[in-house]
Image (cartoon, rainbow, N blue to C red; front, side, top):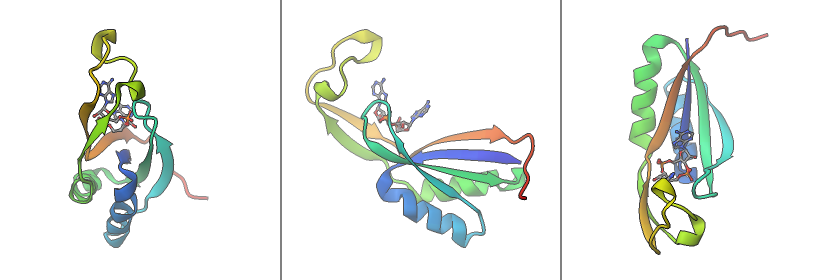
Length: 109
Ligand code: 2BA
């Protein structure tokens, strides 16, 4: 079994969840905050059998859009290597950032 963590845009969270539920996958939504933008995003967690991991990732991909975002350097005090970033800066916020972890034990009591 695997535990899938997916960080998605707040606007996509419910769409991803609905599609996962429609396809028979359980999912839990957590309200999270990105460390770089200090803005709200959504973290979804779903425990699935190994053979369903790719299907779940496909659904997340289909339902999450990447977005361009313009930020001021005041929101991002330092860039790569500690250099100041020019102002304003365009960044692409995914899509989805997905982690797949092994589950040692799973129980529903
Ligand atoms: P944030 O940390 O708020 O990052 C938002 C976007 O800012 C990132 O989009 C990326 O385009 C940019 N960014 C982040 N750190 C940067 C840096 N040091 N220098 C320049 N640009 C930077 P995504 O990569 O699509 O990430 C979206 C959200 O996913 C992140 O929000 C964070 O909440 C989560 N995330 C991404 N990678 C992660 C990781 N390795 N571990 C944990 N969470 C991660």
